[in-house]
Length: 395
Image (tube, rainbow, N blue to C red; front, side, top):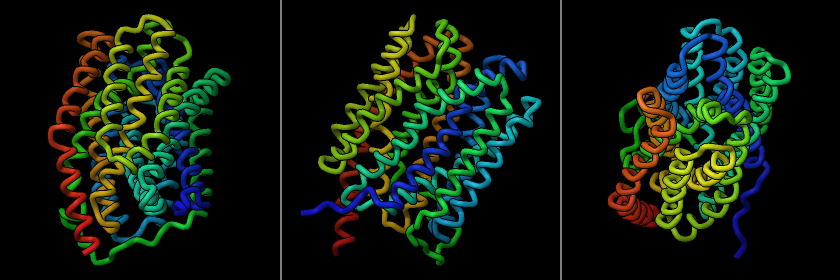
């Protein structure tokens, strides 16, 4: 029996446009912390605020964006959000104070919430149902590859030009290219104009238990992404971009394999690999004293984290009807935003009181909470709801 085609023109265009946009996003990940401390003259603990407000802004907009994607369809809203995102990215050079930078991050986070909700929803529409885990995993590589090359290119631009202005304008130009590519994607026409703006259409309760696992796992991710540049400085490691490159290598190796395993055998085994890799990677990171240990930790973390999002996102999509994918995706990504927002604020204070090394050790211990919840509650809930949905679909 022939497999349904996955690598269609629309799927590839969607992935590549999202990749280019995400590269611009990762330009700022290792460079904004130094922009805050070196250019704006703020203390290191303020770095957590620029990450946290971005995530919380995305969190606030996601529920309504999921509703709009389900009610009015995907194409126009997605393209408009991508266009606004490009404008805001190019505007970072106007930030002459920390207050204005926070304002830009607030706007940027909100638009990011719309773009990522739309990107995930459109992916679930495009890929064949029988290859959904594989398709979402491959799409997730767009973010992974951008995580590898984005920081490296961003740091190189800064090194060669010494100008944050050039960095920000380049990020904006890349986003405009992504908009042009996305324009040629034939977005599936999935909409329900009868949807009313009510709680049931902005929040999907069926996926809460899966989303809660993502929330807890986003907390250590916030610690890694927010403070890894400062931690590298503390360890006298000059090229932070290597961390992201090796991290992305770990993700790229494991993600295509786990997507297929998810489609064939379900999420139990692959999430076990994820929890193991994440805990071990965080412990290794907390004990790193030089470049070798730092990069080994990056690879193990990439191996663990590379499984999480596509596996849990596939679970979420599998639990709802096509007309509810927008709100289900927004509920899921809201959990990520909340976890990153809480994590950035909380972990920044832990690092200030104790140390960055001890903060990463705390992150490792905190991962035991979602692991217990997943195998104790979430997996059973998922299996039960899948059976009910399949019974209704084929009735």
